[in-house]
Image (cartoon, rainbow, N blue to C red; front, side, top):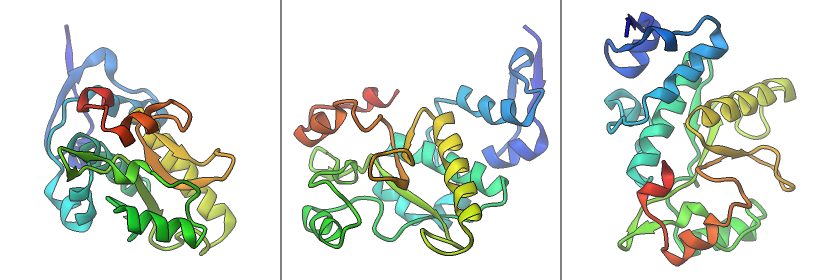
Length: 195
């Protein structure tokens, strides 16, 4: 098999020089984003991203690593992604408060996931710090939500952009109606379910 190097701009996102099979090299910008999906065994969050987004530490570790790379790719596209202050892991009381003010429609969220009683959120709300949900123009917000959906999909994740009650900032590992919410609420899931 012949090997090629990923472009320098891409390796900067990934924290070093990486070899990939030549047949996996991209010929278009859209394909370049897809190449990131071959790096499914990443185990560390780049330290510069963790420093800027400390709420990543509240997420389930495998989920957090992939979200860090979603953030890096959004930054490379000129966005300013930020994990929203109510995102990351939530207690039941926090979820009840968020639902009470109309910002959520569910009693249990992937934000509330635990592993062995420890916080391990399986959902995150990413916004562009310049616009959040209501700032900037509708076109700017839509461009961010669409980019977020594309970059989350590279990791196999889903956003709430097209839900009946849209939540475009929300990213989670499974589709809304996959049945996984009940399993996570009951504690019947493992990191293998994220693959």
